[in-house]
Image (cartoon, rainbow, N blue to C red; front, side):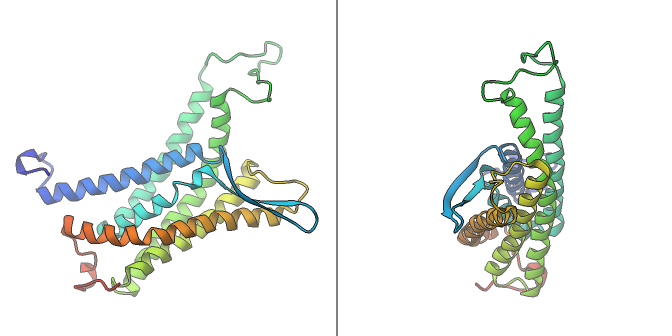
Length: 268
């Protein structure tokens, strides 16, 4: 634990340094997870199960690998909203948007600059492997462009929705019922995010593993239901870590999350 002599001149006190470092950790987890999921994104789909239809077809329950770490971003913004307020939470969300743009730029410039890939002298195009695939970077690049385009739109809608609904419930309950604002904000925003990502990924990137022989609407609905069910379950599960985290951080940061409402205690 730092003492006064370990502080940088811009850190007013040990407590101030502690609060800023916790904010940095939460923001770092949020932004690092966001960058990871946008690169992994739709590079692989995890098959959770199959369902035979009356017509002899198969409905596949699957989620993109990028979905796995995504619920952590909502937990981070909930902690930031609880202790640092709506403005800081929205600022972190905005920085996340800039990070998306940075990822796209790096992927774009990495593909434009000359490399050592084999080129067909007759067509001037890169040589594909036996499976018809481009070199690994360009396959990842194509998937990332599709994933980031979908996630940028869904991300802005979902994250700002999460922050807004969190503070709406916090005001409505006057700082009480911690589980309501944690679950209510996350579960609503996850539905917005899942629906937007699935629709954009299919109609813009054409990257979903759909069966052209089956009705597309039913398959997209199944992807949305599957993805949202996973996120819903994780959101419900993170209620306990959120409660424990708020209790511990309230003492560690010496912040009463209900102070802005003039309330002395938080009811469960």
